[in-house]
Amino acid sequence: MEDQPARGLIHQFLLAIRILLGLLLLAWAAGHFASDKLVVTELLSLVHPLFWAAMLLLVPVAWLPRWLWIAVVVVILTLLGNGMFREQPNLFRLRMDDPGARASEAIRVSFWNIKSFSRGHQGIVSGFNEDDPDVVCMVEGTYRGIVHDSLKGGLGPSYQWASVRQMAIGSRFQILRSRELPTRTRLRVFEVRVLTPDGPVGILMPDFPRPPRLDTREMMQELRAILATSEPPYVVVGDLNTIRSSWRLHRATAGLKDFYTEAPNERWLATWRDPLHLWQIDHAFASPGVEPVFARFGGHGASYHLRLSIGFVLEESTRDSTDQAFAPGTVRESSASSPRERLP
Image 1 (cartoon, helix red, strand yellow):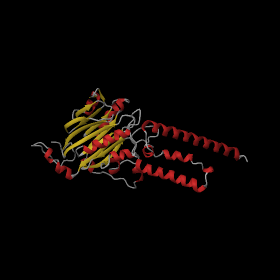
Image 2 (cartoon, helix red, strand yellow):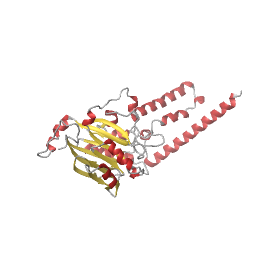
Image 3 (cartoon, rainbow, N blue to C red):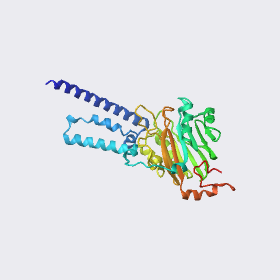
Image 4 (cartoon, rainbow, N blue to C red):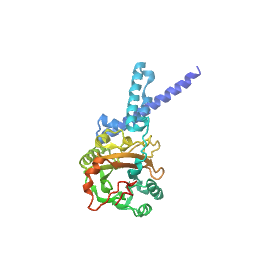
């Protein structure tokens, strides 16, 4: 008899939690429907998979027949498992590939949303120097469109810089062209084409501003059109403010290679340091003709975003097709051990 009051309190607590979660879910859904007129599939694609774990508390076990609540639990666990597989695919891999010697041959690109140096300059410079990248890509790292002097000085004179408002790319390779692509939405895409020892490669750096309303659909559609008309080979690195399990992201990058699944080096994928460290919103993709080699994270504490370091090589067919891009008299020493040593 003494256990009955305790059980009653537990039931009341669980009921209160269910009601609170239910109200939050309805308010959250209503806000999304009102602001962007989302259909159900679009709505679910914006939900982090671990949300379904909390939904288990909404199952009224005592109010439903056993077979029914078991079925509900199975459905929710299926949604959780499917979402986690799309959001964190490397957790389901039994073996992780080691890039080994190929990493020394790879062209290295380091991307970072440094949040306007909100946590100081020294950690940013140290992070980039730790990666020793051939190409540096950063968002929110300029002042009136000019790369900050502390970053230029810290990384040294070996980089050529191209920058626009809030975005900059530095390259140890020759920069063939740089431009901000025209867009109809608030999506911004900075394109730089560099001349590597194996041929020209495009670096596309899209930036999705965090909007007051969810116009992600229009920006993703425009990004999809830009990628479809971009000249390969190229890599895409950027802060897309979109989680991996979003079907919009998968549609926009259809036909591209995902660095996190093609060359996995991290078990847990998350680049935004929220309290739970769940969100993977900085992404990297490669066009046909580009072979991903590795993808790594770094920069803990220097920015709210983690630094993303990727490596890639050009496939043989791509190298053959880009030989004509070299100016007369350019010498390529393919026996060297790194892209920097192979530079003419």
